[in-house]
Length: 215
Length: 126
Image (tube, each protein chain N blue to C red):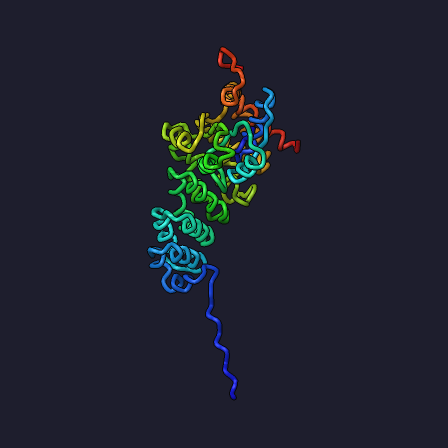
């Protein structure tokens, strides 16, 4: 009796049984009626170079009601990490849905600083203070402390010295304290003078000063 | 009481102000950690931020209100967002009080006293 060559096991992806369906045409599968197929498609798009993937993922995210698919889309965009992917996430920072806007910010924060920063920096001049806060939080957490490529010390100083909204300024203080950027100390002093009667501002400025002194 | 906020400065400020008024303060950095702490030791009051990583404050309060052992815990939502719709969203999620950041010490203490049944100064400033 001759040897029977064993059939190779079908390849499976982490996306599960719907992975192959999504892999054939992930852009089309992203609009499938089955949430598992859409999740598989988002997963596939995050692991391949597919032209137009960023816009398609963002379009799907706008309408998506399934939490698992939303998470897969946000993970895919963070993984793609192109300027288009970063730009596609920015509009979600303004959504009524707090879970979605926070998840969009987290995805931006997972991207390299050189990709996320150009998408976030223009928001520092946005009319909506809540968006400016998100911009400060996003920029402040990017993994390039002191990186001169996007002038971290400069924008932190600009926010603390000029932004009219106290909460935007306080977000900058928080970012400053976390990053430990003592070069912005004079901006901290300016901020304290700009809001002299605010107990929280005084506390935050003191805390930031102490963090620079290591105590 | 439990203060849930991803901003270390807000947590530290709230702790200082509330402990000075005799409250015992525990902290959590997001909604998931807040729920874990609340379930482990139900607090007399929770103070929750809106925008946090991993789990936002609205979601945390909704989960809290579904838990039989925590549904009656009073909650203050604290946020930078000052629109009426933000307040409404907080109340719908289960908040009993809404404070716009930055918190003023006397407002924080007054709300904490009211919601925990402690006497409030007649002038409104404990």
